[in-house]
Length: 87
Image 1: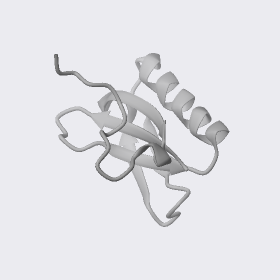
Image 2: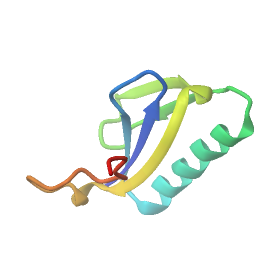
Image 3: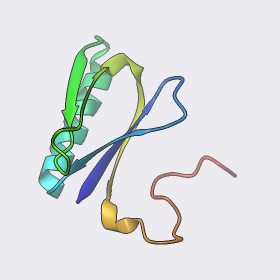
Image 4: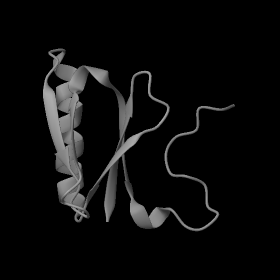
């Protein structure tokens, strides 16, 4: 399982969407990145492949960052995947 995680403006909690394959996760990552680069706010409907009843609609202009990682990278007691902003 792969996770595409979004950070939103003025929101302390990220939004995560899961994909079953790396190709699907990379496709979603590219779609979100393209929406961020376009400079034209648009609504994005996202649905989780693990729990298909979970879905969210958000405005692309509110996305600050997007990251992609494999869910198995999160083990018990391990550091959360991503990038550290601390020195």
